[in-house]
Amino acid sequence: MLKDLFRKPKYVTVSPTAPKKDMPDGLWVKCSGCGEILYNKELTKNLKVCQKCGTHLRMTARERIEATLDDFVEYDADLSSVNTLNFPDYEDKLAKAQAATGLQEGILTGEGIINGLSLVVGVMDSYFMMGSMGAVIGEKITRAVERAIAKKLPLILFATSGGARMQEGTLALMQMAKTSAALARLSAAGLLYISVLTDPTFGGVTASFASLGDIVIAEPGALIGFAGPRVLQQTMHQELPPGAQTAKFNLEHGIIDMVVERGQMKSMLAKLMRLHQGGC
Amino acid sequence: MAQPLEFEKPLVELEAKIRELKSFAEEKELDLSDEIITLENKATSLQRSIYGNLTAWQKTQIARQPDRPNFYDYVQLLFTDFVELHGDRAFADDQAIAGGIAFFNGTPVTVVGHAKGKDTKENIRRNFAMPHPEGYRKALRLMRQADKFGRPIITFIDTQGAYSGLSAEERGQGEAIARNLIEMSMLKVPVISVVIGEGGSGGALALGVGDRLLMLEHTFYSVIAPESCAAILWRDAAKAKEAAEAMKFTAQDLLRLGICDEIVPEPLGGAQRDYAITMENLSKALQANLTDLCALDTTDLLNKRYAKIRQVGVYSG
Ligand SMILES: [Zn+2]
Image (cartoon, rainbow over all chains, first blue to last red; front, top):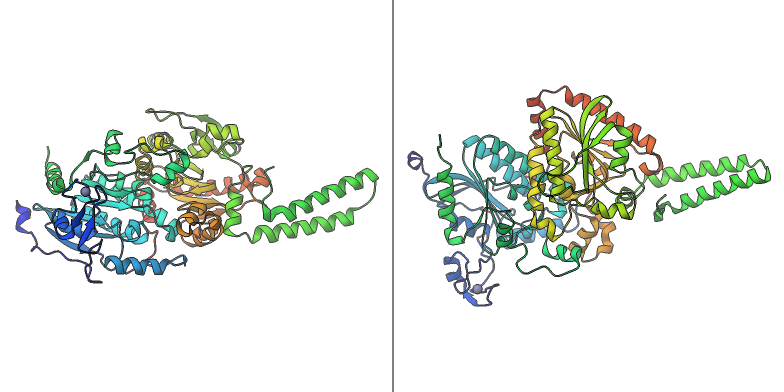
């Protein structure tokens, strides 16, 4: 392919702000699916999928980028949140999240390559304040969408979030409108957007960009919904049926296109991108 | 009239006293006009001091008062020839959202809004204006129709939020809201949204993407209900008052933050005290905004709408 000639050298940039630190910490990790104690190194090699039961454990944004992309150059690495509303303890929470994850904010965006195909990509990180969306995440996604439009590249966003960030009040809510309005322009430009929903994806993220993919994919076992399970139980005054809000539940109700195992994700994304080239 | 709120009680008591004195004077044929005028002046200044210095929590309470004008009141008092349209053509007619076509000062417009009920029975039928996905899809159907026929759209926002239940999840609540956000951003007709009571999160925003956001004076528009915010952050729903202050979600806060474009004044004491004044104020604001927006060509309209939505958010770097 012609594009391959212009391929950048393989290097994966990460925000220079803090040393890389994997979450969860330590040598051994307990599988949330089967309870098996797993050797972290092996687990990471297996893309954080339990070798014993197949449970897809949560990944950090960096782990996912390393697992999915052959090449990644980060955009907007220094955008960071400010406590616009003087919300109690917000700076503190931000500082702790930054220290724990080594990230500036709960998303990495940039340009990357998958199997020789260029794309614009964004990957959220649930270890950063539950991936809650404030102004920085909204702005980074919007800029990523605008760059995809300018460069005529496909866009893939990996979502994971508890919803909009309370500490930024209505400014956070409005990021739903902002990211969606940007995607409207991407769509009008005839460009492909694939949304990958990973565990967990809820609230304002589900109710905006994450649901707007031309193709919506979920990882096996991921919990996906608008209202969280606890809120649902409160309004319904009863236990949820088993399997509610899982990827399978969403597939069966026609809300997503497919469930793709992590080991197959990269090749599926590449195939979908190839299927969106050309036409008559 | 709805139950007076705690902070309104001194005023309500004073007003009762004035009424009592008036009927006493009438009954006994006494001239107590001096006393009455004094008390009335006192009531007016008390009213000004109460409603001129409302806290965010007090505004939250006023915005939720059940006797405030609701969607159908605005439709009836601001528009003529309203024809209600029903259903999403796919699943049901969700009565938490209502809409149709009407004339506004002679111009055909599409009107859509969250429909709170006037009593418990109506509220149950309307699910307390907490829409299911089919409600948002009905709204979208009506807005696409407006787009086709070149009618401006006016939406009324008044919900504590989208319905949280398994039925809503099964039918794609998140997708339904998201679809409205993306499509509203591209409608080729002017879209004006008015917060008339509660602006509850994504469930409110799904009718709120447009060219202008107007808010009545005593309303709020929040990312999450203050009770839920307090429960999550401080594990204490009773701290809703603190959460309400912290989230800066009143019309006045949002005007400062560049989210609200215009505050529509309410009569002293709130919209529920005088529907006629409320309607008059809103009618003027709607007409002025509509005139501005109708003067723009489509490209201009859409570029300005995108710029308005695009600029929201503060960050460093
Ligand atoms: Zn396992």
